[in-house]
Image 1: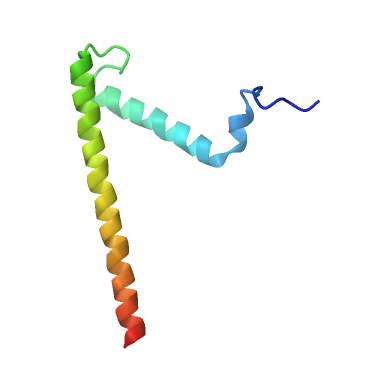
Image 2 (image 1 turned 135 degrees about the horizontal axis):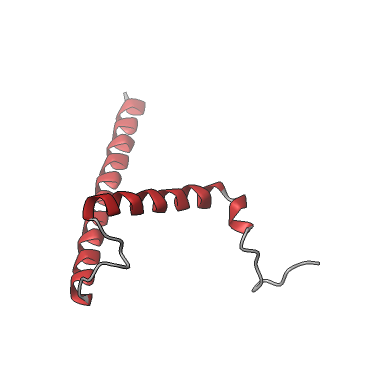
Length: 86
């Protein structure tokens, strides 16, 4: 019997290697965070304002990583254009 779109099997995620890899990375990051800070996110007693500040700083870092990647792609494209124009 075919499932309806709003029904799913909790085992379906195991078919997708990208999801498996991402879950592994979350588990690894959680373990590293616990070793570094000695607490889990659930146990951490930061205020909501502190959590938001941390999230903002992480988002700012992400923008920097994205810009760095964009700069690298553009540099490679410019180098390729110069090579083909020679």
